[in-house]
Amino acid sequence: MAVISDNIEYLLVFRVRQKFDAPQIDDVPGEVEAQLSRLSLGNKIKPGQTVAIAVGSRGIANIHRIVKTIVAHIKWLGADPFIVPAMGSHGGGMAEGQREIVESYGITQEFCGCPIRSNMETVIVCEAAEGFPVHFDKHAYAADHVVVCNRIKPHTQFVGDIESGLMKMMLSGLGKHSGAKVYHRAIKDYSFGQIVRSVAGEVLTKCSIAAGVAIIENSYCQTARIEAVPPEQFEDREKELLIQAKQLMPRLPFKTADILLIDEIGKNISGTGFDLSVVGRKYLVHKAADDEYPKVNMIALRDLTDLSHGNAEGMGLAEFCRTRLLEKVAVDVTRLNALTSGHYTGSMVPLDYDTDSEMLQVMLSQIGLTEPPDAKLLWIRNTLALTEVECSAAYLDEARDRDDLEILTDLRPLPFDASRNLCDEHMKTA
Image (tube, rainbow, N blue to C red; front, side, top):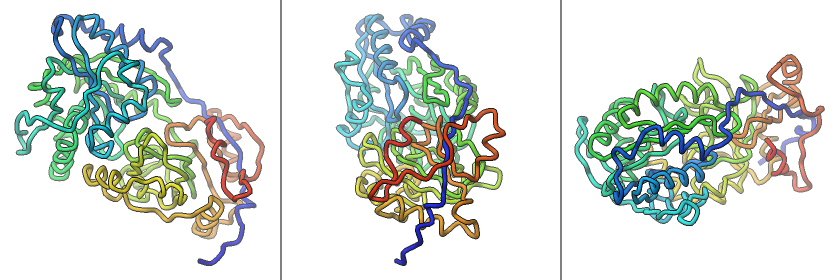
């Protein structure tokens, strides 16, 4: 390959801090306890009964403390709680892999004070109206009651008044690999909204769901709201909570970019490694829809998180990456997730380069007639950490006129080291 001139030396950047509306719960365990007490679960959960607590694979703020408080409340009722990983095909579609994911978030038997029962076996509880089997985790099905705990947020692929949250966890999460596989196939023939309502309706009727604990986060990845929801209100409350979750979502500071540089992707960050709603890739592959913002021409991925356990689903939705990311990919795990979800383009391989310098030089050569000093480049840690963003000089005039942005630095060159790579610690304060 021809060597490209070192045009990145002329690309200057500055850092901004975004100002978001950010309600926050200070006493998370206290709020969980207050919400659960409001439901008077003792009217249905009796002493000596077993209660499965379903927990997913996303990196949710305070999730270990939230689960521990749910466990304590169940014990206070005199019942016997245990934790069930509810994450479809994640963790390589294996029981031990899913247990490791749960424990990596601090949800351990020692911390929470109850067992973790992880397996991939399911019970077929019935047939959905659309003609496919409804699967449910074997341990959870055998319990007297089930409590579902999850964050409410926009889904990375599907659009509707219900997206990612309690109801989806009852499908793809507690349905394990077998259920997730058949539900995603059914969505191709029907719609996400129809299948969610169809399967969730059967699960709510037949699988002893006692309550849900819904979580909303603010733009700084802090716990903004916790609500305990009775099963008969799952659908109505999830619609309302999703509206609030969308309002509190973090976002990029500008509507267009030639290049978006992302330090890390992973399943702990988003189902597709990086949140497609944030980068403007929710509806189409490799570009934004006509009425979708932001509009980002090219995306470059620098690394894969350790908490993703080799699952690089979503990498194929970016155009470029560092070679080190590909070296961390567990190919079988990534492909299993992609094929189960039917989002197989996400497991395809971007163009990779050994160094950040080479990767950025190539990208700058692909932005048309715009000269490198005028390129619109944004640099973020990940799609959850958007408080601080590095921006190229092309954005400076607009940033000066924005009340929601605080300019933190003067213009300066990108921080390359002697190996021609960017500093991995540079965005960790964001």
